[in-house]
Length: 456
Image: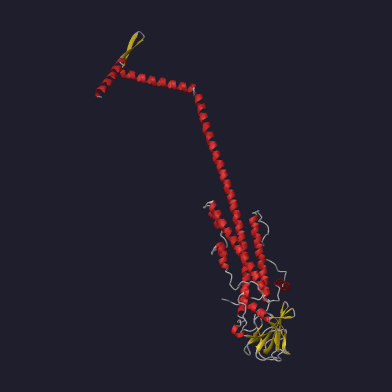
């Protein structure tokens, strides 16, 4: 390796000495001759300078000759790059516009769905307020009537009061209505415990839309819509059942037709006052379609049932269903019987209720005293007009605590049990008249005890 390097160096040195020997340049001027010596290094320097100069001249010449072609080539490459860039930007813009359009459509659908759900929720809230009002009125009546009397036991008389509707002689199927509706539980089925009063937090749903996928939000909205539909189905079922129950209870008296009696009670009320939430029978303004129309029609049916339930509740409150005595024993039924004095068969127009002498006699409802005094056969006697065709009569009193023309309230003491008039011992002779015809008071008492007493 060393010998190769030495041989290569010697060849270069030989080439250098052969071409770059010392030379002299003679210059003759004005008859004089002068010379200038050029060393090998000087010659090499001049050669390098000449090479650089000629290279620069060649480059400049080529650049001048091919300048336009170079510029045109550069312009062509630039235009290609610009065209590719603009095409890519157009693709990105198209994809963005498509994505933005889908986002706008999704947002519009989401907002429309949330508005529809919020509207349904507000309608349900108004519906539940009306339902709670009706339930409260029924609960108030139940509490009032529950304390009026203790049902007579079998040992008292051998007469069993209604404890189940299927035991009633009317063969009408009536379910127990004494259980208080669970308002809060029903509302939790729709919006959860925290939403039962304040409503659905739709602003949080809108905020969550930016952080959750559309499919997840639609799943949540679908679940909420299903919960609302399930809730309104349950409410409709309960209101339908309650209306049937109240009508059946009125039929248990054997003398009252629910529809005609409700019409009679309603005609006595002021029919000019109207109000309540508006529930459209058509679709929403933005045309949400068949489902929303069906929901609104169902809401209308439930609202109509609630209104009918309220009228039935009001009508029942006008019927003398309470017992005039707290503790009693029935000693003589309504209808044909053998007279206790002469032993002959006759018609007994009321119900004989034996109790302690001096026991208080209560008014079974609000009314106006039309007679208070002595009446042949009845002894000390009170008659109360209760409106809507009803009047009640009380005989054999030991004392009268009201006077004719006086207004009496529910459970107000009107007299005391006695044995005045045609009587064999202390008892109350109790009559109920409807449209001027005497009716069986026991049917009314049994209906009242079934509806309003606390059972089980």
